Length: 290
Image (cartoon, rainbow, N blue to C red; front, side):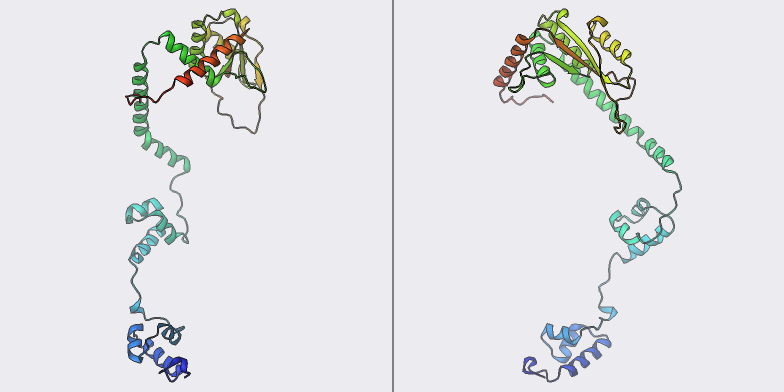
């Protein structure tokens, strides 16, 4: 043995001793004490390639669960069923049984979905009633609107949904476009408040070309009380077959555009009022506003 190994005269002789003791079932600590090797690196070299005895391995607490999970999977149980049975996570179950064949479906996807929906119906019904109750209470809190409140509301609606003047494109004219009948009703009431004569109002329907334009024009005309002669040419949006449209129900009537003739002065008043609202905003006091 070289001087690097000090008192260990023969490395190979020590290795033979260490391996023999290992095969007798001794632990690393027992071997170290028996052959008087205090250097762990040297001990690793002496035992290199020699597996530890079975009794030294730490038991895995999940071994039994893993075996049971595999057994249940082979019986045709789903991940959900195994999770309920064993109380372990789906991620662990997936690791344990992913090499096993998937069980055959006892129900079709449609049948499973129908069962799931029936199970959810009471919960969905309760949630829907909670939504309606909250909306009813909020609506009742509003009460009547004063002229000032309606004026401020109309300015806010227009600044959110109406056309705006831009430095690069001067458009000082009032045009309001929306698909929500409630928004249209509030905006027309605001125009009445401001004294905008019906003769100055022009209406245009904007709708998808596959919809029923005649029904849409009648819908908006009835809502605002305007005759067909007050409507301009309807704008049709071309159909894109690659688009999965959601607005295909009987309740779809497109958008209504309301344009005010000779409205440059009105537009300036709206913009000025909006600036006044922004300038008047202050941090609200804590209160029951929600």
